[in-house]
Amino acid sequence: MNEKRTDVKLGFGKQLGFALGETAGQFFFGYWGTFLSIFYTDVVGIMPMAVSIIFIVARIWDAVNDPIMGNIADRHRHKKYGRYRPWILYGTPVLAILGILVWYVPKTDSQTIKIAYVAITYILAGMAFTAVNVPYMSLQSTLTTDPKSRSDLANLKGAFTFVGTAIINMFTAGLVAKLAPVDSYGQGYFLTTVIFTIIAVAMYYITFLTTKEVYIAEDAQSKASFKETIAYVFGNKPILAIMFGLLFSMLATFGRLGVAVYYYLYDLHAYEMVGVLMVLPTLFAILPTYLVPKINLERKKLIIIAFLGRAVALGALYFVDFANIKAVMVCLILVGLFNYETGMMSALIAPAIDDAEVKGGKRMDGTVFAMVNLFAKVASAVGGSIGLLVMGAMGYVANAEQTATAMNGINIAANVLPAAFCLIAILPIALYSLDSEKIQENTRILAERHSDSEKDNT
Image (cartoon, rainbow, N blue to C red):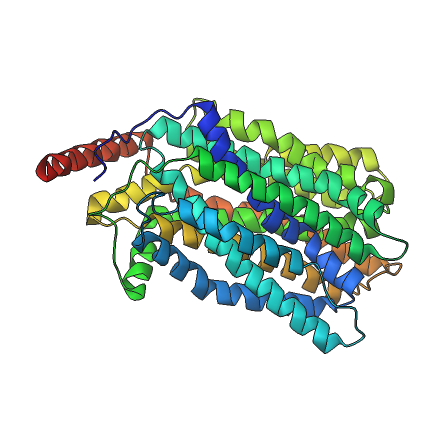
């Protein structure tokens, strides 16, 4: 065990340095989830069904790749940088290159070549993102064992998720239009990607430089087989509750982001306001994500209120007349105000890992966060894919005036499906069994256990 104190109080500067890594991730994963579908269908010219299949195949591969990556990160430690920080240092350049290649599709009339290129680059970029983001997420529980600092860290990280999303939604459409020559939006997306990638790389390295792993539980770190790893994750009820709660929460968030631009373009015909409409929910989610957790109320209740509020706002949005832009904007603001739960749920992951260590003596931070990362990817792909399938089934045709049925399909995909996912997410969160007293008790037990271990080592 590390002989230094692990219950360090993290100041705002160190919390900010860590949270910037979350914003950096949004310049890759969030950007893909929001604009890659429409780029592939409306710019590259690939059929929505093919895009959906590519996304689903990539997620199937992630189901194997992500847990393996988490287990690798758990089992290897750099003498100088720790267990998880080296992946940020060395993996970021690879992610940057592949992240740019995703948006550089060869100009060809062959659908086969396009589909093959898109599938290969997208899957490889997803693997690179896993190699950086899983260790980044795992880093969160190693920076301190102090419950309040952990909670503040998760809340700020959640807020900076929306900071990254807001920047992407606010500037992408304008940058693409400004940087694209006439009738060449592919180049506009490519140059926009280069700008976002440079910013993201800088943020990742700030995270690397401002963080330090102080809690490294060598004895508890598992050298388990893949089978034992799966048993560890799926045998822990609090971990499962958070994982499935996050899954449906992110299905609602990413599923909507993946098709929202279709709603604004083809249903509302708000071509000049796409940037504003895209950014409204994320802007109004930033402060609640950071401030609501400070309310003295049980976390489960606050999270359930968030899901209910967002479901109602999305349901109302479905019934708003397409011409009533003001009412649409009000609903979008409400969607943002009730979208504060992600950071709160993330803050409950480390206590679940602590609980598993107390009960079984094993600790698999990287593995657990890899599964969370996998669920986020599944949510992004499946949510968007379901939306695209609904749109395709109801008659959507790219770059054309839509029929009333097709417009309704877009409306269902953008608003009704996310509302349903919000309601489903309530069930697993209601089953999360660790209250504040149990979390404090586990923290005390682990502190005593590790203190005894230090004395033995001395």
